[in-house]
Length: 309
Image: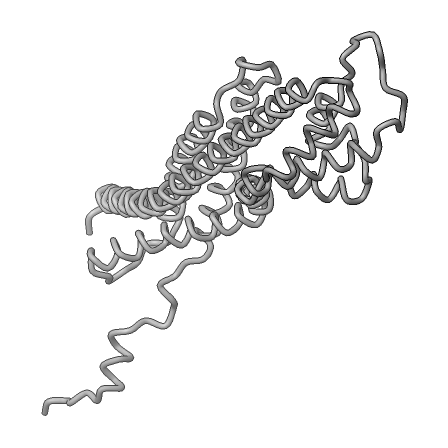
């Protein structure tokens, strides 16, 4: 008499009760990958500081530094993801009565989970530092693009006079510099004039140009305060305005370079993470395969050494 199995009986026979996910090897691989990532990032930081110098022309450019950092991040991902994935595959227990294709899938999945957990651990430790570095570059680019004068305008509005910390302080001093180099203006002599000149320069920097009325007023004010002729005062005003525009363009160029470097770093960093996920999965499959091969060899040796019955 043939026994007919119900669907419930078939499922109970074909499925095992333990889960296919072995969290012990996954956590071990993730911890190893996270530790190696931190160590390599510290090494990269030390190497990066060697190419940065406060001396003009002695330091690498922002683009070179960002690309080098992104390349190093890819190397870090390759090494850490490979080690973590390999340990996750090698340390797992052998699956019995499981098809070879299913074993391969489970190994790759364990490597991917180890990489994901390690990424979350590293992001939790270093995420604030990375976001701060990227955010500062984006903020600098956006502030310069909006006029490069908002910070100076708030300082001028609060002080009402030229300040040494004011971006426009040097240019205002140049405007009202006495014709006699041996004469120094008394403190507070031109407070009202310097305040007005500062606000005019701020407005011109924000708008991209100075109006004809503001320029005429600025020329007359410089001529009356310095003793220059109106023609010489106009020449000085034109020179100062050109210097302000050049400084603003230089700041915009630096911010744009920082923006491009940050974008390159972010894109290459994302590529590094994707490559790391693939390497961790492949390394876990390799580790699991070697673990099963070693286990099979040990079992065969044990059988050969056992006395025949």
